[in-house]
Amino acid sequence: MDYDSPVPSEKLKWFQTKVNLDKEAFMKLDPYRPLFLDEEENFTEYFFTHFHEISETRIYLDHEKHKGHLQMLWLEWFVSLFSEDFSEDFLAYHWTSGLRHVELGIDHRFITLAYSYLRQFCQESTMTGIP
Image 1 (tube, rainbow, N blue to C red):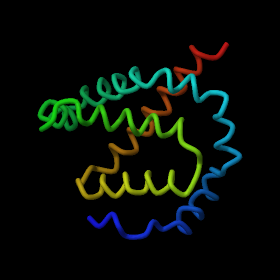
Image 2 (cartoon, rainbow, N blue to C red; image 1 turned 180 degrees about the vertical axis):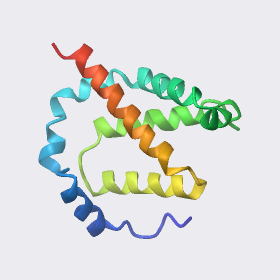
Image 3 (cartoon, helix red, strand yellow; image 1 turned 90 degrees about the vertical axis):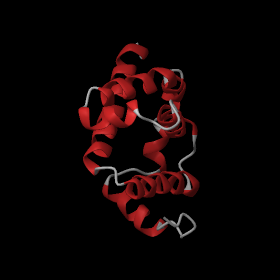
């Protein structure tokens, strides 16, 4: 897959308007970024545990060529969500991540499930971390 091709910035901006995700909405996370960043290791364990329970994904986790590589990628991805500014570079990073999922042929239902797990994890973190 050609990662040097241009990021479809205009299409991403259009999509952002459809889901109401703009810089202002993103800035609302600012007070909570430290809370989530303190949970980065717990997140990777949470993700691993949930995906390990699914037979279709367990096989990949149990037979990684480089043990722990996926958890490292998940950690980087999670940290990027709460440490990066909402910018063109941020969108390009996540666009390229999506291209990688397509290249690997990952079933989109597991990507959707991953975002659901992320939301659940963040909700649980806020319930315990915010008085």
